[in-house]
Length: 216
Image 1: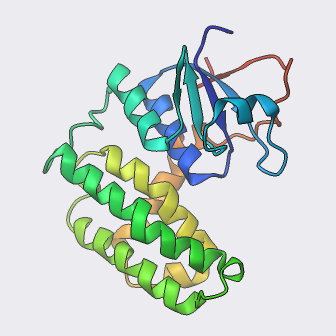
Image 2: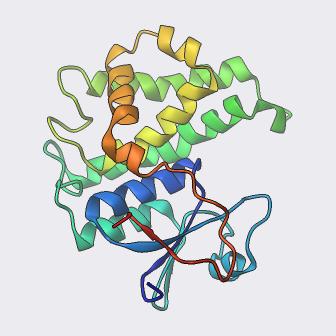
């Protein structure tokens, strides 16, 4: 077990969720160490250059970005073809993820955590974040996934953030006119894959019995 790559994670973090999704679908075993963000383990702080989750240590290599961890896992094993979308190119999929990680995430944070930003207007930030959701809605017309009839990396890199946006005010989100996006999100939340990456893990402490992920 000690020879497995080490994944520092935090259950609710959307970046960590998408890393775990890719690792799970690839079947690439790691040792999972659950971090508490308000009380970060010294070993984690020594490993992660940014002190953020997820962080993967494999041999002498440290991957400190969730998208890099997804690609690392999928390059080892990609049974569902996430790296090669059915429609368009891998670059197009990564460009869409970039829009999620850039403008959408900025507006999402300023909407969900508006009290942290003195210049944030919650309603305005929600409206600006909604522009990205409407882009997804247009893509999902007539197809179950963002790039066709099967899932790609883009779907599972973006879904945890749409879930976070929805959960900021689920009643409002469910009343909006984005039926396809809502069905896409609900199918994800009900899926065995999502459930498999969301069990509650105790805080990791040095000396704990290693926890294998995905579970054998």
